[in-house]
Every structure is written in C-alpha cells, then in structure tokens.
Length: 429
Image (tube, rainbow, N blue to C red):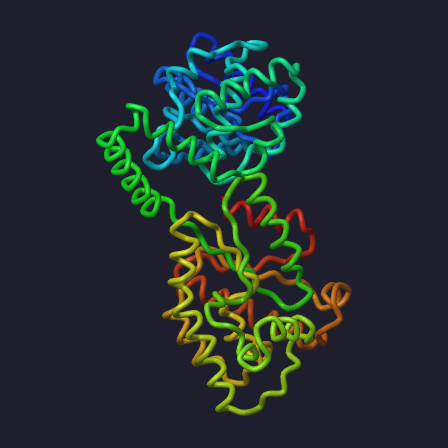
C-alpha cells in the first residue's frame, strides 16, 4: 500500500483507540496491505463518527471526499492526492430493507482486540457475513472459507453449531454455507421475524425509513452517462475496458457499457436474421461497408434508430441512472451526425444534428483521436483521408456542442493511454 493511504489508516485506528467501534468482516490481515479493491466496514457509535469525520477533514493528503447516507450506514469515498482510493462504510445498525438482522448490542458484547484493532469474535463474524449473504440470496463468499477452515476442528464445529441452534438452520459443515439455500433462508427469516426488533409496528417504521432512503437515493445520487466517440482505431475499446475496471474495481462504482445506443429496439437486421445471427453479422462486417444509397431507406433506418434513442433514454434512466450506475457508451448519437455511413445511412447531417435537441445530453462526452499514421498502425480499416476527414468533423462538432449544449464535449488525443485515462478520470471523479 502506498504511504498516504497507509498513514491515514494508522491515524484512523489510533484516533479510535478509546472509542467503541467494531471493524467488521475483518480476516485479521495486516491493514497496511489492504487490497486496492477492499473497503472498511466499521460499526460505530456517535462519538466515533465525529472523530472519523474530523480526521478525514483534517487529512491533507485527501484531495476529495464524497459522502452518501443510506439506511443504517454512511459511505465515505476518499480520493487521495497520489491517486489512492479508500471507501469507509460507517454502520449504525444491521438492517436489510425493513428487517433488523443482527443486534448491535450483541456485536459490541462480542468485541475482541487484536494488535490494537477492535473487531468481533469468530462466531459473530460467521453470523454477520452468513446472515448478510443469505438474506441477499447468496451463500458465504468463498474468501471466508479458508479463514474459518484455519480454525481448529473444535472451534469450527462450535461456531457452526451455534449458528444452526440460534437460527434453526441445518448446515452440515462450513463448506455447505457456500451455497444459497431457500430452505435455510426461510429458517433465518422465521427466527428474525420473531424478534421484538422486527415486530409489526417496528417493521412498518423500518419500511417507511427504507422508502424515504430510496427516494433520497433517486433524488441525490443519480448516475451519469459518459460517451466515447472516435474513428475505428482511435483506442476507444481499450480506454472503455480500462475505465470499466477502474470505476468498478478501484472506485467501487456500479458501471455498465452500452454499445452505440440504448438498444431497446434490436438492430434492424434482427427482424430478418434473428437477434443472435444479426449481431454476429454486425460484428464480422467491417465498418462503413453498407451499400445503402436510397434516401427513403436511409431516412427510415435513421427514424428507427432515433426512436430507439427517444424511448431508450427513459429505459436507461429507469434501469441504470436512478440506481446510481455510470453508463459508458461505446459510441453515441454523434455517429449519426458525423458518420451515418457507419450505420448504413446516407443522409445529410442537418436533420440528426437538429434532432439531438430531444436526445438525452450526457454529462461527459469524449472524442478520442490520433493522427492517421497512428490509427492505421492499430487498425487498417479506413483510408488515411477518411480518418482525417472524420476526425476534423468530430472536433468541429464537439467544439460547437460544448458551447451550445449542457455537458462537457472534450476531444482527447489518445497517444499515451495513461495520460488519456487520467484526463478522463479528472473529469469523471
């Protein structure tokens, strides 16, 4: 782990030395070697929250902080000046929708301290992670099995039997917990619903809190659309793949990649060949190889795909954006303005350009480009003259749209991948 993140973690647990907290889901690994994709889940009391928030605000190496408040938990996303990232989740209660599934009082009662870190005992660890995953329709994550298997046979039997006895489950061994079971889940629900914390009245209050939380999430934490345009060979696929990995793995964001359009409607050839065969033919065919010269056919094709954008933008909003997803578009509507031939459409740019008024305006739009020699070294699919012409037209369009429409329209010369990614991240995060 790099110094800034490591120093912060040392300061964090030093500041919490006299506070009541529990580091959750911890497998006793050295926190100085915390994996890049790992976050910290900490059960806290109000005084501990104040210290953590104060430390975050006072740490000079933290460049940016994002906070999200959810039902029973506050998420803090810490962006360090050297590029490090850390997510800290501060939990106040263990709740899934309207159901309290674990007592915070019992968790604190089972607190132990290891090398100056306060956590819970093995039995409570198993109880927490198994309940959490079973209630979310999955089994115990595989990463926990080697840890529990490292315990003595006697302790393995003890913690599993204790869980079975309390929740009425029938797991035969720890390996059996890896698989989700509807029967075991039903037994868990039966026990939890019998608790006074989940009485009818309290569950009703929890349900109201849950609905308020959903409303707040929709209102305050909308996702965003990021588009990538460029001629074939400009490096879009590589950059999108790396962005997908960075945003999803390192920064723990929900990410989805869409190709060219919302695709609520299938590609036109699917009506003739079927969806799978049409998609296969589309992948195998080189770009800009369609032979359509008919104005009527071109306008019909454009109208069909434009309808997909009009209807599909609401579909994308409902399915992804309200849930906080970052949607990465591999090409976007701009292709119809600049390079309709790529979609076998032969019309002037005036109509699709004007109709962009009614299409969703993405927050970030990146046009990746390079000189013809560089592109032809990557892909030999277009002539140098075509590459130059399309690049100039895209740059002109992005310059115009950046002044005319909401959002950012930024051309980026994609020569060095690391530089390109950093430029995109500077605008994204």
